[in-house]
Length: 75
Image: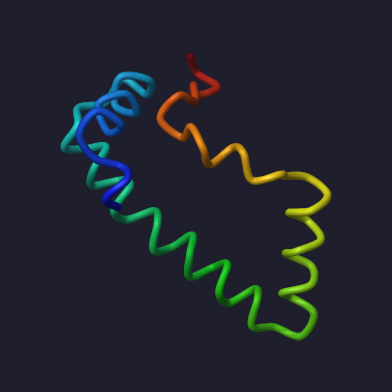
């Protein structure tokens, strides 16, 4: 959560057209849910391998380098 504060939070808020407080509330709620879902998936038989395969096949990790610079589909 420390990475999504200050200027980054302001950029995300601007991109989605929400005020910073609402954006902070949404991010604070969404991140634990996403991480929990990933943990549940990884704890299932074959789940960790499936997740690693999906990441290796579809994502090189660079998307997380510039989270604040992403635009929403509505933009």
